[in-house]
Length: 156
Image (cartoon, rainbow, N blue to C red):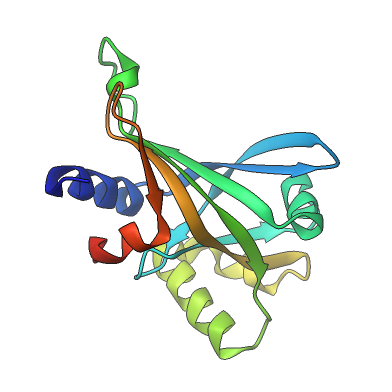
């Protein structure tokens, strides 16, 4: 990955707040839109989700998931030139009250302060999608398969 591609990926990860979460259960795929927060090392993505949601129930049964992000569609003639990434890994349900949970909650609320009231709801859980691999497409015909280690140098 070139320096300019790495910068484009970093900007995409840091500037995007809304992505498509893909889950599956019993051979039934499901995608939904979720808010997320990137962790400083780019190795994890925080999701604060209700257990009442179908995607959350799927994740609790099968923790493999993918989060797809795309640059904002600016109306250009060819949308395939927009940068996009599909992040894949395992989802962890963070233990409420643990140091890890408290740090993740503070990070989430620093990005989405209006979500504070939902942390008091019993059905909401804080999850981490732990990055395993990704498919980054900086533009048409430029697909790059990335490993977790490729994200280490992105810096925040």
